[in-house]
Length: 312
Image 1 (cartoon, helix red, strand yellow):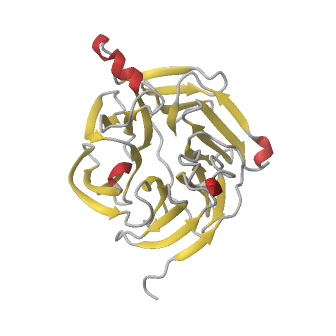
Image 2 (cartoon, helix red, strand yellow):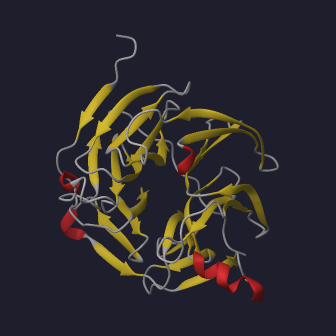
Image 3 (cartoon, helix red, strand yellow):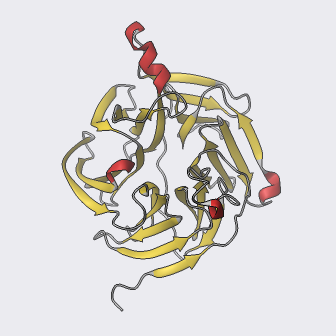
């Protein structure tokens, strides 16, 4: 049948870790390590994939970190991150966070800084670091007070999309003519015209809208494969959906917990983070593997992630 989805079923985790909010999985190709964050518990986890789950190392963080990126020319110890108050570098050997650009730095923004945090993001092919802010659920009710920011290599900051409620997956087409961005409560992945030379975006369109699952289900983080398909986590549905370049669902990964957050490619496998179950009374079946890290072979590789330029 033309509309038949290819299906993968995952029955148990690769790493049974119980993150509060597992996010930002990132493959370090040079070392064959995988890192990912636990935003609400302020941790950075790293696994040596040569050795497996027993190699897990955990770094306790001063502030929450939602997304990480490698820095061009830097050793593996220093990475760029989207943290509680803005863009920063993180020394993994010490846990030291050094802010490059705080978003809410004025005296009259202290209260806002307290109730906000960064969530997801990505670096484009020109080295611009895009990252989204949102209300910190540990502090405030989630509204559409957030925004999508762009930090250029010269450290100039641009507010690109607002209002935003829960910024998630972001990436670009292989020809760099379009940018895709998820604001989860809209249940949509938006598609913009993208100008690589300036970093500007325009002409927002709906690339895909989630039409299945419960009302609280929403697209979350995603990864793009080498054929241009988007693999998006669906929080509250227990799935990762594969979307064709035309925005059609052509595959699904079914997982044993509901709150799926983000996939990333390691060769032809996807590693997938998850969060704690938000409605345990009505979904007790989701509790056993909540917050775990999952792995599944999907038979295609992903597009490599870009690096943030060397710091000046």
